Length: 107
Image 1 (spheres, one colour):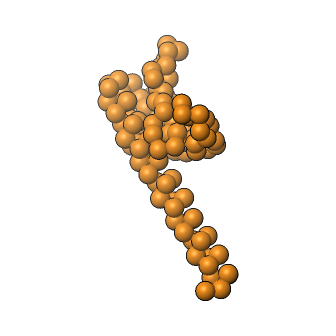
Image 2: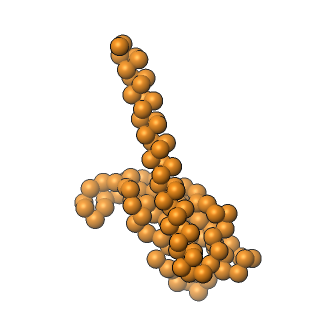
């Protein structure tokens, strides 16, 4: 196998892994957002999340992990849109935040 063929296969493999990892993290964020909205008795709008931030962050274990923050929108009454966030750190949900009108935040 030539180097260019091996290099191409490696690039394709890494791209496939990155795509799979991003989809898995997004699905986790959607599930966490749904659960948080259900617990707070609010409506998750559009039934989805959108990637808001991407970076590296240290976890509780002291190691660097890929940190993704997903934005979601919810409504208290079906008329007004409010924002919330789900943070995925590595392979786990690190935080869910729903910003309420009185300024409080639900985690």
